[in-house]
Image (cartoon, rainbow, N blue to C red; front, side):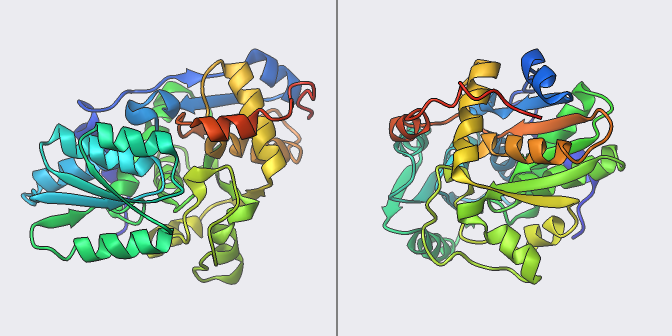
Length: 328
């Protein structure tokens, strides 16, 4: 099924009662530093603290709308999708079990449980993914995957869909990319509402399966647990659905850990809100792209979440980056 703007609009209608229409943030100082206008879609203020609520709610609402209400919902995630599915299942009164790797953020594990889901931990992401596949075989059980699902993609795309109605004349859109759900949905929304705008994906250099997949023309899988602070982008491989959308992007960036930390500190400071490393990394891609532009640009970036645990926070702020002013 080829998804289009109408599918994003239907998702938007489904999720309105359950999610926030999040604000657009900007920083005058950052704009002065870079010489361009940057707009941030603040999904760290979303339900569950991340954009993932959109895809989770849309998928469960779509199941009910199409007469497919399951007896039980299962999901697999190392982060915010776990909370999203737990939250969505709770809204519709459906029991949920979420499978997570042991290395997942403790804050995200605890939050998933707080929404009423049973959480089952496994040593690796591969074991987690195998367990959810087995659980999904049970009659009456529906698996809501973290990204490789049409309705998950449509739900995630509503963030950029909203943003284009909040800010006009956007020249380029940047999103973090893990499994590709947000980036795919954002691409559909961008092409539908502003065909001239550029669309870019961004991932950590230390977890660059999507970039490798795009370079080689086929889906590549990480060989082990990636060493990155961007826990929201630690997916082992993109999906066959999302990969087709990623191939339509105008560009794709890989960001190193130092730049990821740098922008986590600076965006936290400039925007005065809590920001995950995963969603700060597109800012470095934006800076790199802006250096190639000869005219003033208006750029939209999705801040995908704000759920950061103490160990990650300590690593982010171990060294002070705020003495190094952002350069054009």
